Image (tube, rainbow, N blue to C red; front, side, top):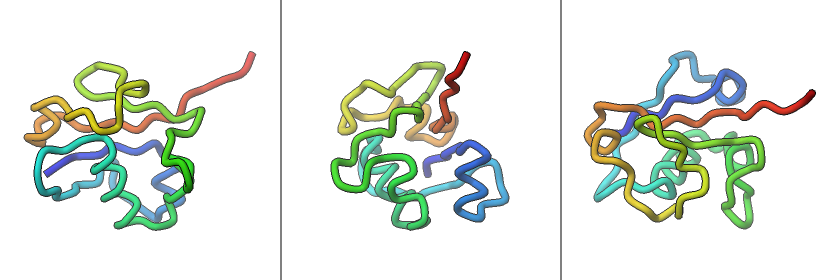
Length: 99
């Protein structure tokens, strides 16, 4: 069980009312498997978090787990054990920009 916490704008887009989504994954979870499962469950999120073709993270989206920025980690790196166990959430955060 993986807990995924989404920013408000993505929850609104997907019609999700809860702060977190719970996903069941087989095997050791990675960012790629979590995002694949999230997009499979909520197809409207395809292209919002990652580019539809390249599967690369969108510029103003960041990924965090256990107080670590995972945004530039390999999408196939295993997530921290606390996230894999469901003790800590995987966070998808909309970055802010401006002046």
